[in-house]
Image (cartoon, rainbow, N blue to C red; front, side):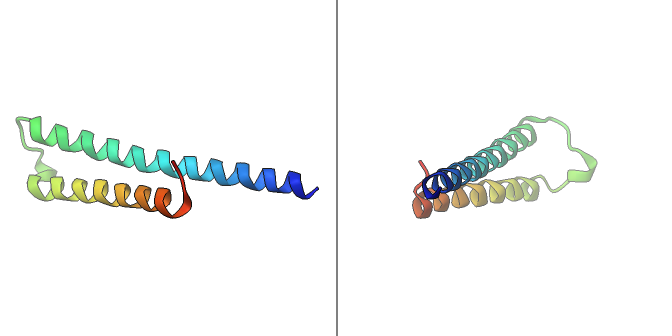
Amino acid sequence: TKQMKRRVHTMAREILQTALIKKYESEIADANAKITIMLTQARIIPEHTDITGEIDKELGRIEAAESKMAILKRVYGIN
């Protein structure tokens, strides 16, 4: 029936939206953890001698995830 198809469509949409929000929250948490470690770690990791560049990269990840989450909420009405 049409009503059942609508319900399935609504459920699928909610599942996808929830998955995206969790993905963005995970990106933010991961980047925050890496920044915290870089700022508090006393020794320099040889592969990451450009600490400021690495922190800037992680801040970019946070900015991108926050922006995507805001768009999803604003444009698609996600709470």
